[in-house]
Length: 64
Image 1 (cartoon, rainbow, N blue to C red):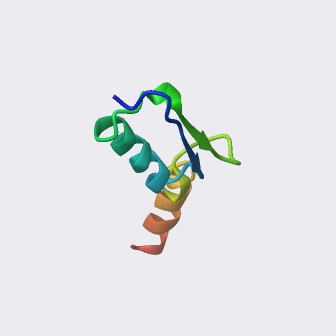
Image 2 (cartoon, helix red, strand yellow):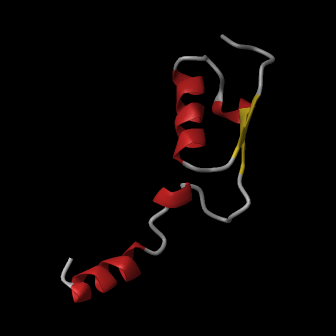
């Protein structure tokens, strides 16, 4: 195990979330040893889906 090591990831987008998952799975870090810094209140970056319902309505109205 990777005792004493910590990881700090900047941004809560898909890249950082994937990095955290690989650090746990392949790097042997505990989740509590990984810190993700994100400016917004929700993780996921462009993939957070927060506005997906508005986009789907707009797209449907435009005939997408």
